[in-house]
Image 1: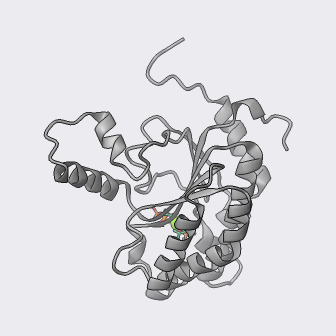
Image 2 (image 1 turned 90 degrees about the vertical axis):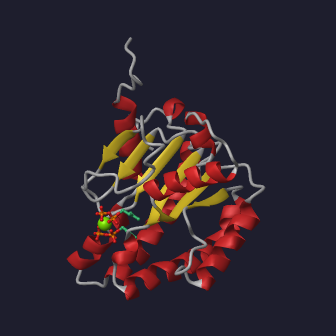
Length: 236
Ligand code: IPE
Ligand code: IPE
Ligand code: MG
């Protein structure tokens, strides 16, 4: 571990926009889907390292509501990787007491049946676990999440709501907001990620493409977060 990392001040909730798989692959003359495959290896390590660091909630952006615009072979390649991930990781996730949730409309038309089955198994098998809470944002959009929350509220017949009501109807109900949102690949935007929850999140950007995001890069991002002065609108 890095010496400048303060293990007593690790963020409770880390969210990550795993970006740059395509460019990483292109740089190497590989197919984009090979970039996603390499990215999956990074994800495995990041889940493991989050546990070592003592992170309580890890939320990763795996597929956005806008990613359907991509060529069909890339989209189906990504959903095949979901199946592969569950096959290879489920035993370890259980052994490590990891609780997995999927944020987003993952049961939607268009998501392949085999991926849905894997996700159901992943959620069902880990739901009693009490360790790291690992959220996978899949077919997730921040605006869609807000609209979905409002529709749930309307269906319940509520006619007056406050911020807590909305929070309670998000996919992240009951979880703390992300302390930090890390984005790899040098892009400077949130791309519809955690629109409601990111109000006071620290944003940490790194130029590294996701397949090259090592544990040391992860720690550097946490160190960067620890240097920030979070004021939440107040002052000292
Ligand atoms: C992120 O990598 C993974 C997904 C969006 C599924 P990209 O595929 O966006 O990679 P770049 O940004 O094109 O390099
Ligand atoms: C955000 O990355 C979505 C995921 C990482 C899953 P994108 O690559 O889709 O975002 P844009 O298009 O660059 O904003
Ligand atoms: Mg991208």
